[in-house]
Length: 261
Image 1 (cartoon, one colour):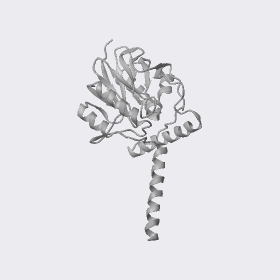
Image 2 (cartoon, rainbow, N blue to C red):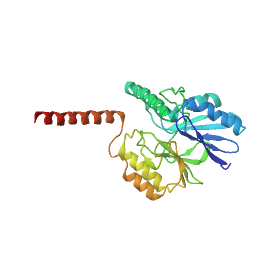
Image 3 (tube, rainbow, N blue to C red):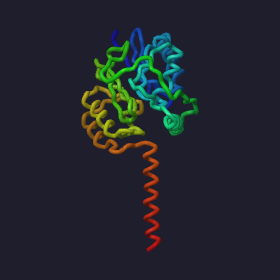
Image 4 (cartoon, one colour):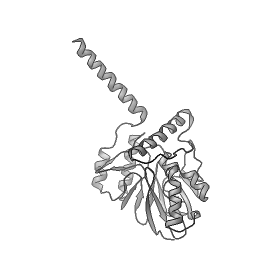
């Protein structure tokens, strides 16, 4: 059946999008754990439909505002979790678990900046999707939607293109803050990130739906300007700490030389 509409809901720290059909619903990303009651209440109260109409939840990547609610949605509705085809877990190993802890706390930091009340953001560091997908494939049960691999922010980011309308959901690939577009934090692979931006630009989307920045049309000029300003080096917590330490070391050396004079 044809798509009725795409609805944006205000999540805990991000926008959450529902693709609503007469007989089924897809959540374009897993959202935060704190978003689960809100989304299910919207389906029950506003749409006046059973929560079992939620058939698919896509997880575009493993950060807390994109994967945090996925398992709870599956428990509550029986929906399928669809995500990228990767053998390894993003938060695998000791280092991965440490990063999982850091990312949850970054979520709390964003929530505080937005004036949100405290809510539980904890979710499992591992994900076992029911179905895995790769670039160019169609979302199971929703064959109007095409999966696009758009890495750079992490190694496994997905975007979703609604083929009939050319609307594209880009998760964290592009962030809109006030009057400008900015790259997400982190960016693990700047080269892949820039290629992902070009990939979306070349699709000539009618609308870009962002997890942080709502939905809007983007001209080729806007894409080109943003791509030109994209990070040229990795932007991760590790790289940020290293940069600050080197900056302080260089500054201290400069002060020491001045004192010797």
